[in-house]
Length: 295
Image (cartoon, rainbow, N blue to C red; front, side, top):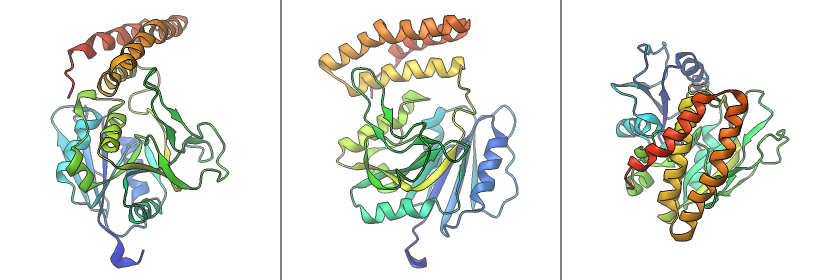
């Protein structure tokens, strides 16, 4: 791309009680080499008022009066975005200076590309977290990340259609958002990007992975790996996703698998850890999902 070919890109990230991570993310963005960029930070009703650090970046800070969840926060950002392409990126990531250019190249070279996700690596910068993914199994509600745990030796440095993006970094054409709609807010946390992906694919578009771009992701920093919040929303959103995206025998079987296999397995694991709070959160998530109407 020469200089006149750089379309405006909007980066949207959400801060929720994680000012240190947001500052580190912002510091890495200051090194970005992409010349036509705006950044939107949505503070999702953090306990402490988020103060934007001094920066030369073109930054808009949006303060939400309530925690709208992952989708709701990102949707606030969409309302203020001017970019031809919007990159939804977690605040617990660190970006490399040239990570945007290869993503825009995919959009330019593939007219069917509605969404692009880069390679995602762990903080050691050599272990892969995501290099594309297989579709969510309609019977179990689980997908499979390719490359997970492998050492990055360049074996995934290619571009191809994939079934699922990674929620840590999703680049989307603004025209596709205008066509399909914004992120589904009924999930609040987890599976919203997967449901959105299904809507985009059902509209006739494709999702691409590119290993020519990569980011570092700390993963679950703001929520915690073993928190009641995560246990609650993971179960609630998983069942909701299956209700929305499966029908007939697949829907019935998937719910039965969760009841017969997943719930007992999780319960035993939590009992062995003495985590009764996680058991309570899981069952609350199961019950609460029935209060959600399908959209």
